[in-house]
Amino acid sequence: MVSTGGDVALMRRRPAVDDLSDEALLNGLAVGEAGMDVAFIRRFQRRVYGLAFNLVGDAALAEDVAQEAFLRAWRHAPVFDSRRGSVATWLLAITRNLAIDALRLRRAVPTDPESLVGLEDDAQGPDGAAVASDAATRLRRAIATLPPDQRRALVLAAFYGRTADEISTSEGIPLGTAKTRIRAGMQKLRLAMIDQGSGS
Image (cartoon, rainbow, N blue to C red; front, top):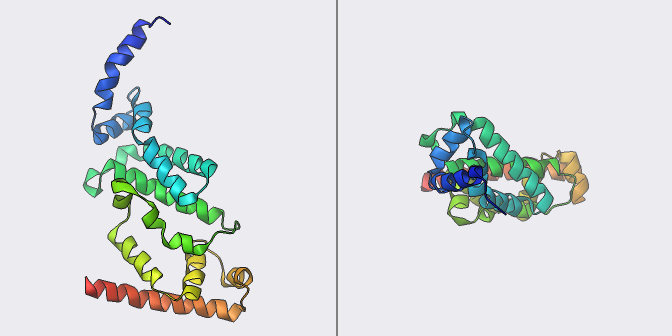
């Protein structure tokens, strides 16, 4: 196949685009510069999809999350503030939030609530680790200290948005027990967060 002049020009431009910093690439995306969208996706697609898949555990859903993450990045590129973190951290935070939202929407699908306690640990690699803020890490650790029955009830309520009545049904426990577990879990969680804060 014979290359056209446009192909040659594109080949000459590609190394320059690939050498741009993440911030410069995002700035180009923000102003609609030609080719920046493809270059941005090419640079981050493995990390974004990998994080989404680690969190949702489903290839098709992970693709949807990744696609929406790139759309949001494109929409919000003009307001990106590098003082609040790197482009990679920002993009992976968007991905993580979308993945958790997707899990909430699928709350009718049986999933072990214990798996949600480790969401921060599933974001592997330096970029994934950067997504987890200090507060989120402290929260995850505090949740992990709760008794298993209270932890399950609290995670079902907080992550899945389930009511005490729904938790009562899914866990096979009386409604009053479900309410007690959620309330006790919240009280112990607050104390654990205070203890962690005073210990740091």
